[in-house]
Length: 146
Image 1 (cartoon, rainbow, N blue to C red):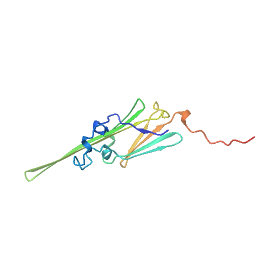
Image 2 (cartoon, rainbow, N blue to C red):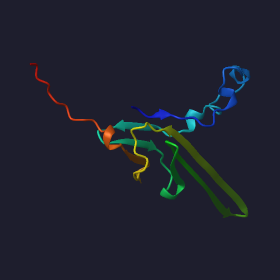
Image 3 (tube, one colour):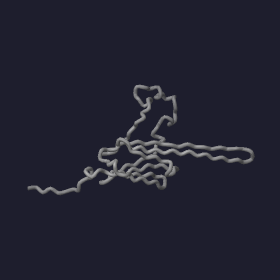
Image 4 (cartoon, helix red, strand yellow):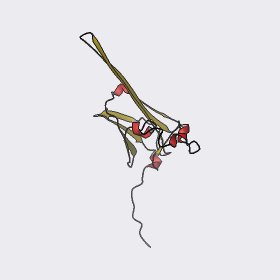
């Protein structure tokens, strides 16, 4: 069974009944494209676990919040920064705010009672979710014809 993308907060303008924002002249950028601000994700199913990788460079370990509730994996990160440069009676302020949130509906084969291994290195967040013992693939066996 594969992981399924879960969208708890569906926005009303994504509904086919509301076509106001579908006009070509409304916005020509990706402001309302939520997928453009989400980190790329790889999901790999192994015999005993699922490996999830999220490309999220520029964050620190402390910026992440990872939770599992009701078989839903929720990964979010927030980072803000401000730089002040006082030079020649001129003040320049630069600040930024970046955040994302990815939620996934976990399959019934994931053992959510086991600890999830999470590591962050070189801009890649890696999660390992263990499978239940009964869900692990049995080894291939040959059946002889009688």
